[in-house]
Image 1: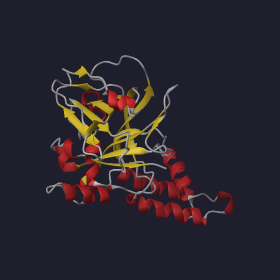
Image 2: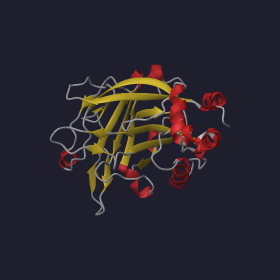
Image 3: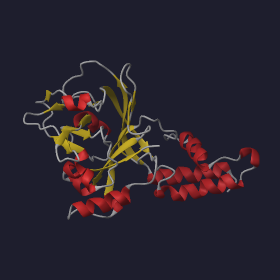
Image 4: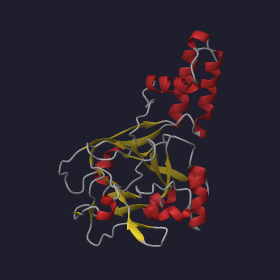
Length: 290
Protein backbone atom coordinates (compact mmCIF):
# COMPACT_ATOMS: atom_id res chain seq x y z
CA UNK A 1 0.00 0.00 0.00
CA UNK A 2 1.62 3.26 -1.18
CA UNK A 3 -1.42 5.57 -1.04
CA UNK A 4 -1.30 7.45 2.26
CA UNK A 5 -4.88 8.70 2.00
CA UNK A 6 -6.11 5.12 1.64
CA UNK A 7 -3.95 4.09 4.60
CA UNK A 8 -5.45 6.81 6.79
CA UNK A 9 -8.95 5.82 5.67
CA UNK A 10 -8.40 2.18 6.59
CA UNK A 11 -6.75 3.04 9.92
CA UNK A 12 -9.70 5.30 10.73
CA UNK A 13 -12.07 2.36 10.18
CA UNK A 14 -9.95 -0.09 12.20
CA UNK A 15 -9.49 2.24 15.16
CA UNK A 16 -13.13 3.29 15.16
CA UNK A 17 -14.02 -0.39 15.57
CA UNK A 18 -11.48 -1.02 18.33
CA UNK A 19 -11.58 2.25 20.29
CA UNK A 20 -12.54 2.15 23.97
CA UNK A 21 -13.40 4.86 26.44
CA UNK A 22 -10.75 5.65 29.04
CA UNK A 23 -10.86 7.98 32.02
CA UNK A 24 -7.62 9.90 32.37
CA UNK A 25 -6.13 11.95 35.19
CA UNK A 26 -3.94 14.98 34.64
CA UNK A 27 -1.94 15.44 37.83
CA UNK A 28 0.56 17.70 39.55
CA UNK A 29 2.44 17.75 42.85
CA UNK A 30 0.78 19.87 45.52
CA UNK A 31 1.13 20.53 49.23
CA UNK A 32 -2.39 21.98 49.32
CA UNK A 33 -4.78 20.61 51.94
CA UNK A 34 -7.09 18.80 49.52
CA UNK A 35 -10.73 18.14 50.48
CA UNK A 36 -11.43 14.88 52.29
CA UNK A 37 -12.58 12.21 49.87
CA UNK A 38 -11.47 13.91 46.68
CA UNK A 39 -9.63 11.99 43.98
CA UNK A 40 -5.86 12.32 44.35
CA UNK A 41 -2.53 10.57 44.03
CA UNK A 42 -0.40 9.82 47.07
CA UNK A 43 -0.14 11.78 50.28
CA UNK A 44 -2.29 10.44 53.12
CA UNK A 45 -5.45 8.42 52.37
CA UNK A 46 -9.02 9.13 53.40
CA UNK A 47 -10.61 6.07 54.98
CA UNK A 48 -13.70 4.97 56.95
CA UNK A 49 -13.79 3.99 60.58
CA UNK A 50 -12.28 0.55 61.18
CA UNK A 51 -9.78 0.84 58.32
CA UNK A 52 -6.73 -1.41 58.64
CA UNK A 53 -3.66 -0.31 56.69
CA UNK A 54 -2.66 -2.95 54.08
CA UNK A 55 0.54 -4.84 54.78
CA UNK A 56 2.87 -7.22 52.98
CA UNK A 57 5.15 -9.93 54.29
CA UNK A 58 8.91 -9.64 54.76
CA UNK A 59 11.15 -12.64 54.00
CA UNK A 60 11.38 -13.34 57.75
CA UNK A 61 7.60 -13.61 58.02
CA UNK A 62 7.00 -10.24 59.67
CA UNK A 63 4.62 -7.69 58.17
CA UNK A 64 5.12 -4.10 57.09
CA UNK A 65 2.76 -1.48 55.63
CA UNK A 66 2.73 -0.69 51.91
CA UNK A 67 2.38 2.70 50.24
CA UNK A 68 -0.85 4.52 49.52
CA UNK A 69 -0.88 5.06 45.77
CA UNK A 70 -4.14 6.72 44.74
CA UNK A 71 -7.77 7.24 45.69
CA UNK A 72 -10.57 7.80 43.18
CA UNK A 73 -13.88 9.34 44.15
CA UNK A 74 -16.32 7.48 41.91
CA UNK A 75 -18.88 10.29 41.96
CA UNK A 76 -16.19 12.43 40.32
CA UNK A 77 -15.42 9.87 37.62
CA UNK A 78 -19.07 8.91 36.95
CA UNK A 79 -19.66 11.61 34.24
CA UNK A 80 -16.69 10.21 32.28
CA UNK A 81 -17.54 6.51 32.71
CA UNK A 82 -19.32 6.17 29.36
CA UNK A 83 -19.54 2.38 29.60
CA UNK A 84 -20.92 2.38 33.17
CA UNK A 85 -18.20 0.05 34.40
CA UNK A 86 -17.76 1.49 37.89
CA UNK A 87 -20.12 2.18 40.79
CA UNK A 88 -21.48 5.74 40.70
CA UNK A 89 -20.39 6.53 44.24
CA UNK A 90 -17.86 5.50 46.84
CA UNK A 91 -14.08 5.60 46.97
CA UNK A 92 -11.64 3.26 45.24
CA UNK A 93 -8.23 3.22 46.95
CA UNK A 94 -5.02 1.67 45.60
CA UNK A 95 -1.99 0.56 47.64
CA UNK A 96 1.34 -0.78 46.37
CA UNK A 97 4.62 -1.95 47.89
CA UNK A 98 6.80 0.88 46.63
CA UNK A 99 9.70 -0.37 48.74
CA UNK A 100 10.09 -3.72 46.95
CA UNK A 101 8.29 -2.86 43.67
CA UNK A 102 6.73 -6.30 43.01
CA UNK A 103 6.48 -7.21 39.32
CA UNK A 104 3.29 -9.18 39.92
CA UNK A 105 4.38 -12.38 38.21
CA UNK A 106 4.42 -14.53 41.34
CA UNK A 107 1.40 -15.45 43.50
CA UNK A 108 3.58 -14.95 46.57
CA UNK A 109 3.70 -11.22 45.71
CA UNK A 110 -0.08 -10.87 46.00
CA UNK A 111 0.15 -9.04 49.34
CA UNK A 112 2.28 -6.40 47.61
CA UNK A 113 -0.78 -4.52 46.36
CA UNK A 114 -4.32 -3.91 47.51
CA UNK A 115 -7.44 -2.28 46.06
CA UNK A 116 -10.15 -1.27 48.53
CA UNK A 117 -13.66 -0.10 47.73
CA UNK A 118 -15.40 2.06 50.32
CA UNK A 119 -19.10 2.40 49.48
CA UNK A 120 -19.64 5.48 51.66
CA UNK A 121 -17.36 8.36 50.67
CA UNK A 122 -19.17 10.82 52.94
CA UNK A 123 -17.80 9.73 56.33
CA UNK A 124 -14.07 9.50 55.90
CA UNK A 125 -11.07 10.52 57.96
CA UNK A 126 -7.58 11.32 56.68
CA UNK A 127 -5.00 9.05 58.33
CA UNK A 128 -1.25 9.50 58.42
CA UNK A 129 1.07 7.31 56.38
CA UNK A 130 2.86 4.82 58.68
CA UNK A 131 6.34 5.81 59.86
CA UNK A 132 7.82 2.61 58.38
CA UNK A 133 6.76 3.71 54.89
CA UNK A 134 8.15 7.23 55.35
CA UNK A 135 11.43 6.00 56.82
CA UNK A 136 11.96 3.77 53.78
CA UNK A 137 11.29 6.65 51.33
CA UNK A 138 8.50 4.42 50.07
CA UNK A 139 5.65 6.94 50.17
CA UNK A 140 4.09 8.58 47.11
CA UNK A 141 3.98 12.38 47.11
CA UNK A 142 0.56 14.02 47.01
CA UNK A 143 -0.79 15.16 43.64
CA UNK A 144 -4.06 16.82 42.76
CA UNK A 145 -5.88 15.51 39.69
CA UNK A 146 -8.10 16.78 36.90
CA UNK A 147 -10.37 14.14 35.34
CA UNK A 148 -11.45 13.70 31.73
CA UNK A 149 -12.16 11.00 29.19
CA UNK A 150 -11.06 10.18 25.66
CA UNK A 151 -10.96 7.31 23.19
CA UNK A 152 -8.17 4.78 23.61
CA UNK A 153 -6.71 2.75 20.76
CA UNK A 154 -4.45 -0.32 21.07
CA UNK A 155 -0.76 0.14 21.70
CA UNK A 156 1.18 -0.69 18.49
CA UNK A 157 2.75 -3.65 20.29
CA UNK A 158 -0.60 -5.04 21.44
CA UNK A 159 -1.66 -8.18 19.57
CA UNK A 160 -5.12 -6.74 18.90
CA UNK A 161 -3.42 -4.02 16.83
CA UNK A 162 -1.98 -6.55 14.33
CA UNK A 163 -4.47 -5.75 11.54
CA UNK A 164 -3.54 -2.08 11.50
CA UNK A 165 0.15 -2.82 12.02
CA UNK A 166 0.23 -4.93 8.87
CA UNK A 167 -1.09 -1.98 6.87
CA UNK A 168 1.39 0.40 8.48
CA UNK A 169 4.28 -2.00 7.82
CA UNK A 170 3.23 -2.45 4.21
CA UNK A 171 3.07 1.30 3.64
CA UNK A 172 6.44 1.87 5.32
CA UNK A 173 8.10 -0.77 3.13
CA UNK A 174 6.59 0.52 -0.11
CA UNK A 175 7.13 4.23 0.52
CA UNK A 176 9.81 6.12 -1.40
CA UNK A 177 13.16 6.38 0.37
CA UNK A 178 12.65 10.04 1.28
CA UNK A 179 9.26 9.23 2.84
CA UNK A 180 10.34 6.05 4.60
CA UNK A 181 9.13 5.81 8.20
CA UNK A 182 9.13 3.24 10.94
CA UNK A 183 5.79 1.59 11.66
CA UNK A 184 5.62 3.07 15.16
CA UNK A 185 6.32 6.58 13.86
CA UNK A 186 3.50 6.18 11.35
CA UNK A 187 1.23 4.91 14.11
CA UNK A 188 1.82 8.04 16.22
CA UNK A 189 1.51 10.40 13.27
CA UNK A 190 -1.77 8.97 11.96
CA UNK A 191 -3.26 8.47 15.43
CA UNK A 192 -2.75 12.15 16.23
CA UNK A 193 -4.03 13.15 12.79
CA UNK A 194 -7.26 11.25 13.57
CA UNK A 195 -7.63 12.78 17.03
CA UNK A 196 -6.29 9.96 19.19
CA UNK A 197 -3.41 9.99 21.66
CA UNK A 198 -0.37 9.02 19.64
CA UNK A 199 2.63 9.89 21.77
CA UNK A 200 2.00 8.98 25.39
CA UNK A 201 3.60 10.79 28.32
CA UNK A 202 5.80 9.17 30.94
CA UNK A 203 3.21 10.08 33.58
CA UNK A 204 0.13 8.33 32.15
CA UNK A 205 -2.62 7.74 34.74
CA UNK A 206 -5.93 6.30 33.57
CA UNK A 207 -8.80 3.95 34.21
CA UNK A 208 -9.74 1.40 31.50
CA UNK A 209 -8.90 1.73 27.82
CA UNK A 210 -5.87 -0.07 26.42
CA UNK A 211 -2.63 -0.27 28.38
CA UNK A 212 0.29 1.79 27.13
CA UNK A 213 2.88 -0.97 26.98
CA UNK A 214 6.53 -0.77 27.98
CA UNK A 215 7.15 -4.49 27.51
CA UNK A 216 4.81 -7.30 26.44
CA UNK A 217 1.00 -7.62 26.59
CA UNK A 218 -0.08 -8.87 30.03
CA UNK A 219 -3.55 -10.39 29.77
CA UNK A 220 -2.49 -13.98 29.18
CA UNK A 221 -0.09 -14.10 32.12
CA UNK A 222 -2.54 -12.25 34.38
CA UNK A 223 -5.40 -14.64 33.56
CA UNK A 224 -3.25 -17.74 33.99
CA UNK A 225 -1.91 -16.72 37.40
CA UNK A 226 -5.28 -15.56 38.71
CA UNK A 227 -7.00 -18.81 37.67
CA UNK A 228 -4.37 -20.74 39.61
CA UNK A 229 -4.99 -18.61 42.70
CA UNK A 230 -8.80 -18.49 42.57
CA UNK A 231 -10.89 -21.47 41.45
CA UNK A 232 -13.77 -19.43 40.02
CA UNK A 233 -11.68 -16.91 38.06
CA UNK A 234 -11.44 -17.30 34.27
CA UNK A 235 -8.14 -18.14 32.59
CA UNK A 236 -9.43 -16.55 29.37
CA UNK A 237 -7.36 -13.38 28.70
CA UNK A 238 -10.36 -11.72 27.03
CA UNK A 239 -12.25 -11.99 30.33
CA UNK A 240 -9.92 -9.40 31.88
CA UNK A 241 -9.76 -5.63 31.60
CA UNK A 242 -7.29 -2.96 32.60
CA UNK A 243 -8.56 -1.24 35.73
CA UNK A 244 -5.83 1.34 36.36
CA UNK A 245 -2.53 2.24 34.76
CA UNK A 246 -0.40 4.62 36.79
CA UNK A 247 2.95 5.98 35.66
CA UNK A 248 4.79 8.49 37.84
CA UNK A 249 8.01 10.44 37.82
CA UNK A 250 7.70 12.60 40.91
CA UNK A 251 10.37 15.21 41.59
CA UNK A 252 10.36 17.09 44.89
CA UNK A 253 13.30 19.22 45.98
CA UNK A 254 15.34 17.51 48.69
CA UNK A 255 13.58 14.15 48.15
CA UNK A 256 14.43 11.03 46.17
CA UNK A 257 12.50 10.91 42.87
CA UNK A 258 9.51 8.58 42.89
CA UNK A 259 9.06 6.32 39.87
CA UNK A 260 8.34 2.65 39.24
CA UNK A 261 11.72 1.19 38.39
CA UNK A 262 13.15 3.10 35.43
CA UNK A 263 10.26 5.36 34.38
CA UNK A 264 7.83 2.44 34.60
CA UNK A 265 4.12 1.82 34.98
CA UNK A 266 2.01 -0.20 37.39
CA UNK A 267 -1.02 -1.90 35.80
CA UNK A 268 -3.97 -3.13 37.87
CA UNK A 269 -6.15 -5.74 36.09
CA UNK A 270 -9.56 -7.09 37.05
CA UNK A 271 -11.76 -9.88 35.72
CA UNK A 272 -14.80 -8.34 34.03
CA UNK A 273 -17.10 -10.51 36.13
CA UNK A 274 -15.36 -9.37 39.33
CA UNK A 275 -15.74 -5.75 38.23
CA UNK A 276 -19.51 -6.19 37.92
CA UNK A 277 -19.59 -7.79 41.38
CA UNK A 278 -17.27 -5.15 42.90
CA UNK A 279 -14.75 -7.88 43.79
CA UNK A 280 -11.78 -5.54 43.99
CA UNK A 281 -10.11 -7.91 46.45
CA UNK A 282 -8.97 -10.11 43.53
CA UNK A 283 -7.38 -7.43 41.37
CA UNK A 284 -4.12 -8.56 39.77
CA UNK A 285 -1.08 -6.45 38.95
CA UNK A 286 1.98 -6.17 36.77
CA UNK A 287 4.77 -3.62 36.82
CA UNK A 288 6.76 -2.82 33.68
CA UNK A 289 9.69 -0.46 33.22
CA UNK A 290 12.48 0.36 30.77
